[in-house]
Length: 632
Ligand code: ADP
Ligand code: ZN
Image 1 (cartoon, protein in one colour):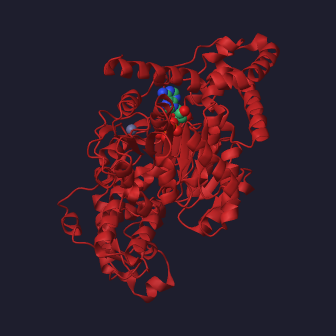
Image 2 (tube, rainbow, N blue to C red):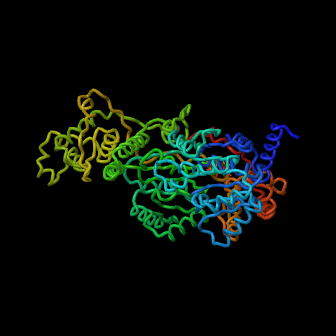
Image 3 (cartoon, rainbow, N blue to C red):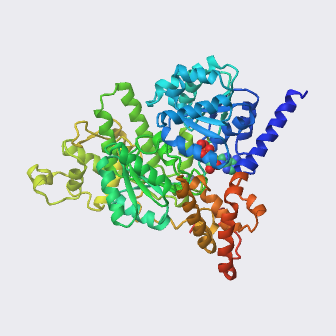
């Protein structure tokens, strides 16, 4: 008989074998190996890992190593089919049970579970909790329970909370089956709630860094957000898939139409569309390449598309949590991606008003306000965004990241004390009864009937702001509001009032260092198309495109998204390495045995054909180290 240590060692050998031969990857990432080891030993696990960190392998591999079927609880019904398709592409016996299945299909799956002929089964939580399903599980062999999106137990407003909170029943009914709870939600409070609600007190906890190093954070201020967005898309993502978030349905519709008018394929997505239309748009986003979805935040939960190259915000998100989560949908595949945002004065005003008007409890409003303040703080920052972002989640990032706008082009600041005093006293002298536009008009000495009628052309502050442009004044007001020197009234007229904080500033006792309004955005074209990190090297492009076309036709024939066949990163590596034999093909990341035997020859054929055509021009240059390149 083997010792327990020996058994674990051999289980881990099998895990490594599966990683290489089924998934086609060389090495485990982060804590994957430790997590898998804990599960094969029968321990419970709680895993906190950012999106794209590689959570799925943590339960998929132990489900294959251990006897029986791995049961995956997930609320994201829309995703299950794609997840199962992706596993089947790897030769794994996977299935799902949820309300979208016809009776006969569900029965066949249940039978397969009973027979022990399933490796992995995805189940919606409400289905899992039925007496019938629990009885079925008791009469089957279960390898483990994986509870995905475990933050759904949290009190912070999740749709699936009820069902999730009952999942502790798994622990009671199946005490010897190990469980793993997984989430990409970073905060401490949620973590504690998951442990308590799911009775995971004895679980091994693995917390990853929440950094998403491949995401570049870019935050712009000012007006003409659309024009800025367009320049950004033209320069950085002329052909890429991405998401544009807006606050209102109307803005979603307008922006999608505008993008279409500019020649980009863009689809709207918001709660005002029928389920059918939304579903259709989501499907197209997953299955086609280079599409843009313009959406309210309703879009995203359940988007598992790995090659979203940018997430753009045309409005300010309401918290850092939301910002992190929404931007996190970019670059799941680990290739460079952008989180771009443009926000303006009106955003701050609108969000503040929305928070005041809701009929939520005072306590909730207060927390919402604090969260918005923190988000504004991140926007107004003149130092590394990543450090601040991770710091907010309690994680220390040791140095400026080099991959955010502030690191790449350190913003200039100016002493705004004098201008702020002019602005504040003008608000005061006009009686704290007017909005930003009016106050700026007075400051700039505008010839205006309403101003004359109010006698404000005779104020000492009339025309004292001529030295700054209207845009510069707006930027100043936004920062004064963001920093709470001014508050915006609650009734929706946008009236400005001084806060208690103003006093030391008005007396000249505090300084006010402000971000200088940037002229047209000047961040240079990114390094990546030279490095091959995000885009293929120029010489590899024709082959990469040919491989993508091949992938698309294979995907369409099977009715699956292209990325379940091969990820972009895998195709890029093929285009660079140009394997000529199956053996060489096997060493490409993301090519496991099943895919090798299914697709190997087909892809080799395309590579051979292209290489023959392009032989004389094959580029000689070595891949360049991104870090070593001058940034402009
Ligand atoms: P998450 O669920 O945490 O968002 P996924 O499980 O979807 O992340 O993994 C993100 C990507 O990383 C996927 O494309 C996955 O195949 C890949 N991946 C995961 N683990 C590894 C690994 N050890 N080596 C290479 N790629 C990996
Ligand atoms: Zn930085």
